[in-house]
Length: 286
Image (cartoon, rainbow, N blue to C red; front, side, top):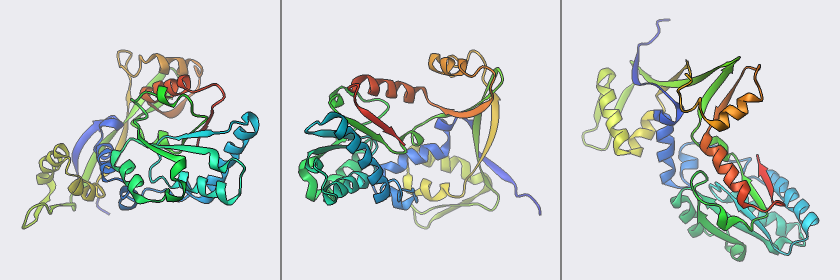
């Protein structure tokens, strides 16, 4: 079988600079509908079984602290269904503290927060919820210092990071090349008649749409893009290599070889979050 010719749309770059990452970031401007349009899995993380696991965490906190009000901060709430399921089960199970659990529902997307507020799913629990736009990586946590429990479900999988591979004493970064094959047709339906491009004609037009943040065209087209991976040695003058946080982490595993994802911003954000919260706060990172 003859291998199809590949056309390079973007040469090797770090994951945060890759085309698919940029399109993914743009897609959340749609709000909640993005979960359905892009087939983002959420059935377990918003289901009753998982909600019941979180209730066991809330119950343990209640037994240990006997606080009248239990404040739960959910970072990256997405559809808001997890908080709803938890509140629903708390009342259904007739927990003695059911009416005293207060949820702060947050997401980095203002569109998502507005849609949750207007959607009405919390109509039975309107006195137990509040809503905030919160960027996990850049915002301040001081106003959340009174929270007892923090939920971050799949949050760390959604932030920009670098693919790294430690091989003995050397550190490599896996970078991404984006291509499309010779049979790929790019169709721009924002004009009439639609513009149909192929092979060498595609690159400039596609990258221009990326600059324009034309999500409808980009999202439809990205399903036919391929990614290829290649490791590059990180030199000692690299900003990633010289990160104090990363150096401390690698110092604990001097002789080992392994692959991992790394984001200094995530490490800093987590440190800031933990510093702002009371010592008795229970952190659930699942």
